[in-house]
Length: 131
Image (cartoon, rainbow, N blue to C red; front, side):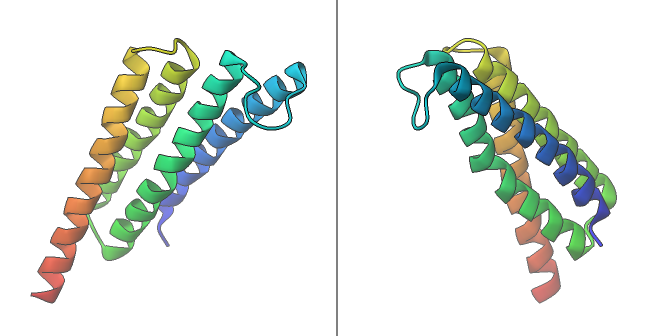
């Protein structure tokens, strides 16, 4: 069982719930049922949640596949920690200003690094087992 991935997936689900609640609360406050209604804060919260949904599931899938393949647990821990840190930083960064922010930039880099590293490691594992 991929317990390391389960650990990070559980933490990321909690973060997803926080992001969802923030969108819902703002929608109720402004009485906006669909879209952002021109509300800048709601738009930021929608994008923070949407970006999370665009990045986290694929990264978690790759972590699980790598863990099931028998990759060294330390690699899974490092990738999982990078993913969690990246998603938290990105959510904080997007929730702040609409422009550049350390959190948004660093969170994006960490998330992309996890996706790239997991793809390369996945190809390496496959190559070592098939050839």
